[in-house]
Image: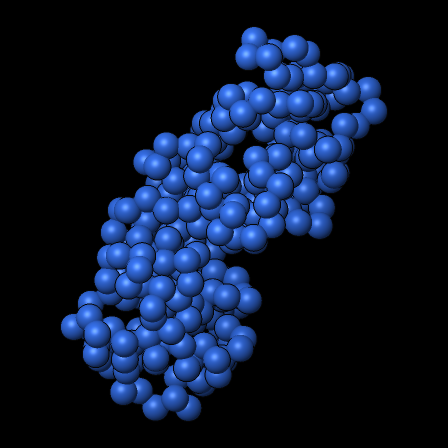
Length: 288
């Protein structure tokens, strides 16, 4: 735990653990936190994030489950923005699993080149399209155990699809989610499945999908990997890792990304709620 100089020490909480208190610099100190206190703090963080990002949403453009599963596979080792700039051409030429299953790999590779690792990704999206056609009648299945059988689809991708295409709760443990829940001391686990289980136990199942969006939004906009904008973070009083990043408010503001920093988001076609909140759509591939 990082407890910056001049911060307060946790006081005895009503549940017998240490409660989170605000120090001289608005720093959270968490010591000997009981499970009950952890649950309370975790849920409070999620409530705060829901107020900060009421428009949180999956940042991949999609119109149906097929587009979402393909886009999520393509998002590995690249940004959602780059995927969103690339998939319009892909889905215009191959709108259905049946179309993509019989596509010329070289033609698909050329379209997917901007996403990186395009040969492996071409193999995955053609392979999963063939599996959808041969094993699921051309429809994306709505069960975890079926989704993870598709080429290129692991638990993370499966939960993105289940939560956002089928409305079935799931926790998306991507790199942002892993980083933030460890900074917040929700878990010390490092393996995605163990993180998923530990964090899932802190929240009602009905919260899981939106929790994932809230955390990922915060990781992309404020709580960055290399230099988090601690001085501009609205949940700093609840964060044990305050001070790992820039604490000066003015300097921290310059680190904010996407709509928090006045820049376009990652979707070319974002939800209306995002636009209403001041968010800007991303430019298409090849635009100035």
